[in-house]
Amino acid sequence: MAGKNNDYTDKQLLELFRDSNRKDYAFNIIVRKYQERKSTTAYFLQNSENMSEEEAGELLEKYISYQKKETGLLEVYAEKFREFLPEKKVLQVFILEVQFRQWLLKTNMQPRPNTR
Image 1 (tube, rainbow, N blue to C red):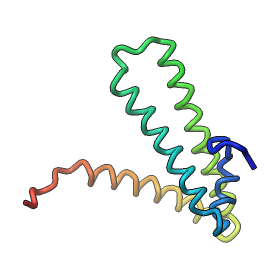
Image 2 (spheres, rainbow, N blue to C red):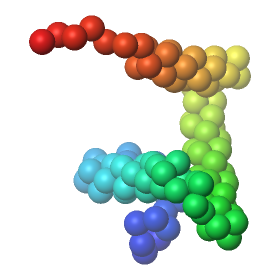
Image 3 (cartoon, rainbow, N blue to C red):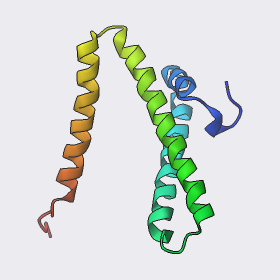
């Protein structure tokens, strides 16, 4: 296993998460990684106008790294799902996830009635 929190691969985090004694530890690492990605995105949105090309390049590399990790996690889950689901069902799971994310975005962007 890795030494630093961010050095864990997605497969290693998944194994940690499966260990009931280390589940909270793994969850905290996952949350920190998510928060780091979110703060990087927020930083870009707030500073994109005044950002140097070098700084933009560094953020781009971080973004590419995040995407690669997300793809790695997708591969891990596909491998696990294939153990008990046929290929078509595995594909359906991933398509449903995309549709669910789209639905969440759509419903969260609608104005909410004032409940006061």
